Image (cartoon, rainbow over all chains, first blue to last red; front, side, top):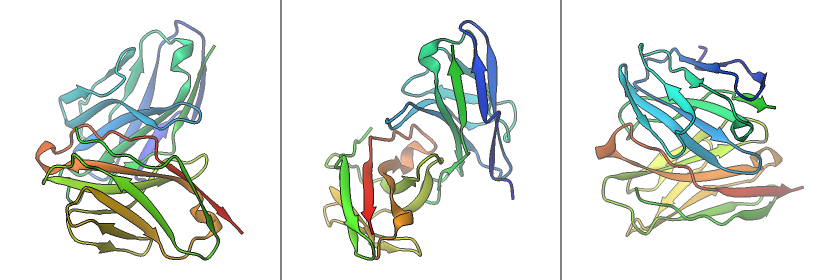
Length: 114
Length: 112
């Protein structure tokens, strides 16, 4: 049972480069989300999705794009990386029903922008 | 969105009980109370959740005040492995799959 899989685990970018962080889950979860965590800080919600074709902004969406073409995948795109986007990124998913909706997190993707 | 307030840090001795408080004075009747924890260098993991009644599982217990404006996560016998940041968050059943906002959490340290 793979759970939530994030790739890559580590990435170094130069300012202005673009890249996509991949997130896949095999639990048929409707809800998926992306968080970033800066050193010594809590998690901040970037974008989330409640199903295929539906996405919405979180607390800190600027500089990031998402799409949800399938239930399983929820990629996060950085169009023009900036040093302020250096962070650890976590993908999380859960069932739609919040009364049973335990969030499952990936292991994280550590991004450094030079 | 209803907010939660937690102490920044707490200390405990190994094998003693730990009570981690969370205030949520603006909680609505449809908000579930969820707790997660994040061990060093790992992603957060689910601990427990509840609506009105106290809840127990193999990891912890959740005590919810009668007016639901506060809750307490109880670790019955702290171990060194329980040293982590503990987050209390609210999930609204009528905003299914909506924004899940994490606060700063409580950093628990456990002394041998």
